[in-house]
Structure formats: structure tokens, C-alpha cells
Length: 264
Image 1 (cartoon, rainbow, N blue to C red):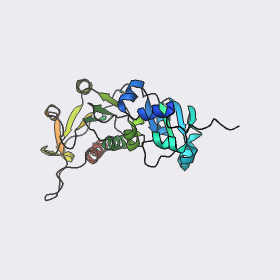
Image 2: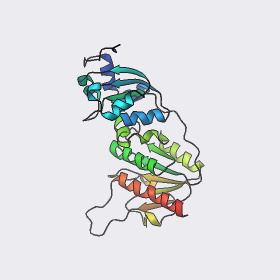
Image 3: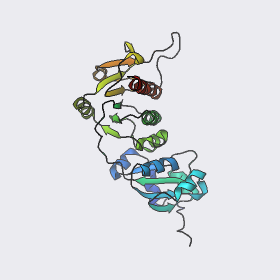
Image 4: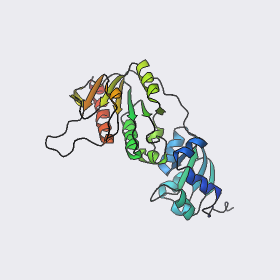
């Protein structure tokens, strides 16, 4: 028996709602996540998120999306190609987009060698997503996102993280909340900043460690640089580069934590 006719009108209320949900304000007002892509949706569901509506476009299906569509839960709504491209945030959409409830889980209590990444004011979704992927790969305990930078559960961060945002605890906190949480659990705080006196591989990065990273153009505020340790990534003398992309820097220091914990 054929399914319902696809939505074709760009003025359809559901299409208009999906366009509005591309803004952070609308997602927060509705308490809804917009997740696009087969891989990202699969990881969200595997992490326990409740997917309540799945929008599909068979004309745009990639092989992965075609296989995943039959496994994903939720009410299915078919969109025409034009309607799906209207609501998609991707240049080459794969024909899957879903709405889900945001994750609702407290930060777990850390183990003795827990590594937490603290992001202060990062605005570029690509950087935040890449850091989440590195944190997931390195086995970080959690990522704390401070201030009103990039939405850690925004569609572009979800895409850049390839769904890693659902694989580890991620919390958007105020600065005082983050400081209190780290202090109460006796984390050693390590500011990553180009003007630090010590190379990152020379700093003690075992035990409970919180890696603090700021924006590339402003870095960390002064009160966040006054930490237990501050570290830099040394640049080759004569190099035209005075600093690294923040996501690259995060990956280097994260895996130095892994190395030190394995050899400690």
C-alpha cells in the first residue's frame, strides 16, 4: 500500500517550522534538536535520544541513508526534493533529517584520570565539532561549553562532530557553574595558550585534568589563564604560523594526556 503523498509546498507549515529550527533561538524555544544525516541520526538514537519525527526524501537518498531509514524510529514524513533542499543545511543532503528531544543526562562523576575539555566562547561550529570528535576519540570524560558561542547541539556542530556530540557527555554551562564543578572534583586546570612558559609535553597531564581552550583571536580571558598550569604548542622558529587552529591544538594536548596516562 503506497504511503502518504510527499509534502511538496515550500509554504507547508512543517517546512516552515524546519526552516525556523535552523536557528538556535527557535530550537531552544521548542526544546528540540534538528539532526541531519544518516550517520548523525544513527548515533543519536544509539545514544538513547528519542527521535520523534523523521523527514525523508527518497530522491536524495545516499546508500547509507537508504539502509538507515528503515531502522530509525519515529513518525516518517516524506518531503519532495525541493522541500527537503529548502530545509537542509547541507550542500549535498542525503535525504534524512530528524527531530529529537535534547539529551537529558547529568555530568557523570569522573574517574581518577578523567580528562575534561572546557571551551570558552568558541563560535565556529566546525572547530567545536572537530574538538568533540577528538575528545570522543581520546576517551575524554566530558566537554564543557561556556558562554554563548557555538551551540554544541546545533546542526552544524552535530555535522562537524559526525555525531560524536552524542557519544560523550556535553554540557553548556555558565562560567561559575563550570568552575565550581571542576573545583569540587579536584581537577587540575591547564590553560592552553601560545604565550605559556611550558611546552605541553613537559606539563604533568595525569590525574583529573581540565584542558581550557579559548578562541583563536582572543584566547582565554585572564581569569581563566590563572590556572594550575599553562601550556603552549611550540612553533618552529621562523615559521609564519604564530598559533595553530584551536581544534588541532585540542587534539594534540588531548592525546598527550592519553600518552602520559598510559606511561604513568
